[in-house]
Length: 389
Ligand SMILES: Nc1ncnc2c1ncn2[C@@H]1O[C@H](COP(=O)(O)OP(=O)(O)OP(=O)(O)O)[C@@H](O)[C@H]1O
Ligand SMILES: CC(=O)N[C@H]1[C@@H]2OC[C@@H](O2)[C@@H](O)[C@@H]1O[C@H](C)C(=O)O
Image 1 (spheres, helix red, strand yellow):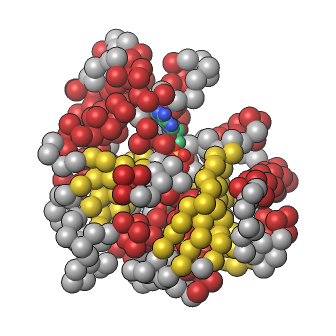
Image 2 (cartoon, protein in one colour):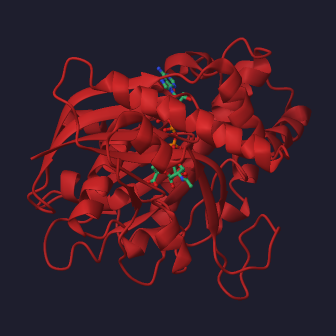
Image 3 (tube, helix red, strand yellow):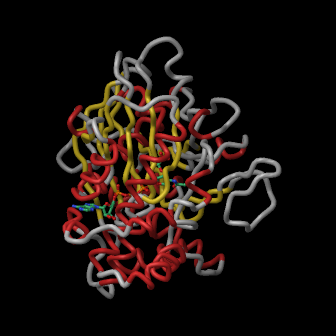
């Protein structure tokens, strides 16, 4: 058994999710016990700087270096805090903070952002692992995405392989739907025959990113999200707008595929606001319409790209607390029950942090972490760079 800390700040940039876990086994016998989970909000100024860079602000190399180390220090502090009252951990898996993600393009294809001709993807997670290792005195694995990207994969999503071993079922096909800033799905067929090869995974598109940006816009920054989806629930979706927005290229791109705030960010929201102009929607109707787009884009992607629909859908990530979004997903999925991973014993809030603890553990054991059918990489590969303390 190994005691490990998993750390991630996702595309919502709401803070650092830290999980302290005990891990044993390797794949089908993999066992994870969550001892502590906590979200540590970024200092407001640091969050602002990160969001500005994510939105495309140009900064100098000196500023980049400062940002990298400010993030690493916050991650190290989160690792220290999560161990309070527990026996110390011997390993950290730190995802870091994504500030840029560019999916690869197939020859002759387009990634939809039209900014480069190179074929490989590129991704940048800040919060350097060697500084986290130095500050905590704990060996740290970081930079998980780059090895998959270097061989032609998207480097995302990476959690599906962990989902496979923690959430597969002998008879039931399952979708594990993360609703972070960006949404992503892992489809796990029943655990028989070549079930792992039959798995699928991809980024479904917006999770909370458009909703959060809209709430910030509509409240002049007073609120950052719609708690439990209460505001949106008082509105009604504008169906013609949803249909129009569903025409967007990304939703029709076959998986494997990945995306980020580069696509579903501020510019995207501004276009949505523009499109909504002629309909004169109330703020609640606008939020309900964005929620409907989020739910419908997810369900359409299952209907279009899965070999068969799952028997149950399990939500995780902050958006699983948005009851209106959950209700819309349930309504569109009709008889397929929509639950949360919490209901099958895995924290819906800390699953991503737990996953990076598992990926660090696999890296140390020499076990590959990517699932080629989800990242599009040509083969399995070891993920992460090890920084000894
Ligand atoms: N009670 C709640 N009601 C509605 N939405 C919520 C609630 N709690 C959290 N959220 C949403 O969840 C978001 C954070 O989710 P999460 O931490 O899973 O995202 P992330 O890890 O940053 O993203 P990603 O998975 O894309 O990397 C918040 O920005 C907010 O929109
Ligand atoms: C580049 C990047 O940080 N991608 C994130 C993002 O947030 C959700 C979705 O887009 C997913 O692809 C990924 O994170 C999770 C942890 C993953 O790799 O599975």
